[in-house]
Amino acid sequence: MVSQDDSGDGEAGPDGGLRNFGATVKAFRKRAELTQEQLAERVRYSVQYVGSVEQGRRHPSVKFVSRAEEVLDAFGVIRIAARELTRRRGLASWFRQWAELEDIAVALNTYECRSVPGLLQTEAYARAQIDNVPPVATPGEAEARIMARAERQKLLVRTPYIAFSFIIEQAVIERQTGGAEVTRELIDHLLECATLPNVDIQIMPTIQPLHAGTDGPFRLLETEDNEWLGYSEGQQSGLVISDPKDISILHQRYAKLRIQALNPADSTGLLMRMRGSL
Picture 1 (cartoon, helix red, strand yellow):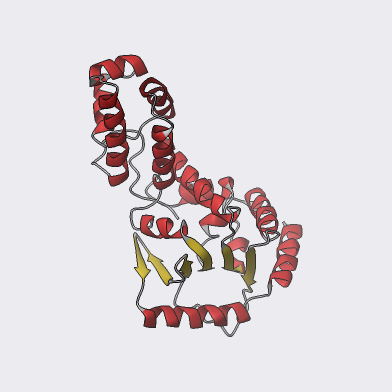
Picture 2 (cartoon, one colour):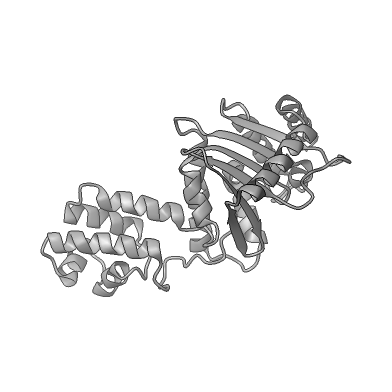
């Protein structure tokens, strides 16, 4: 998933996550009975920088977070708020709601025909994707997107396990995004992920006359309350789906796709042959 709206480390319009982080810093500053000028002096940043952070107009640096946590004796709260901010930063605005739903999922099914799903991407593959999709990302934007992916990927090994099912088009891997070396590393990573007890990876062969996914990629998610939700994404947009009739249709399509794709064992065999041909 490539975000087009990340603001980097400079000034930006107020964002909900940034506002919450800024309010947290401000609350602990007031608890410590410090002015912005006094805090700025102690964390060795300008008053303007502190003010921008508190107003939710600037993403805090790692050093600022560390120094503010220490100076304000914030019981780890500022660091926790920063980790949550990092997780959200780098995600496109239309994807954030779905990313939050992933955190409360017990099952997640993904069909993808455009690129390898972000949860399974290597850093090199993700960077190649970011470099290829206009507008060109700044170094700060690229790093934010990479970090956001890395945070989401922790879901693969979080316990209690989330049950993951991925169906990926063979052509997506054969495209060799980033080149042969990046693709070799990607396939090795997919093979490693496929050994996780809660992860099924199926490859949809390029030649498959019967195909239920021709309407495009989608995802299905089961929450802790056993409620199913769907997600569909296009250019610069994403839609969380909750209507039971629409969810039923997506379930029917995913069930067909699971039958039409190679089973996990055969998918592993295909990936190994693809790896050997590079």
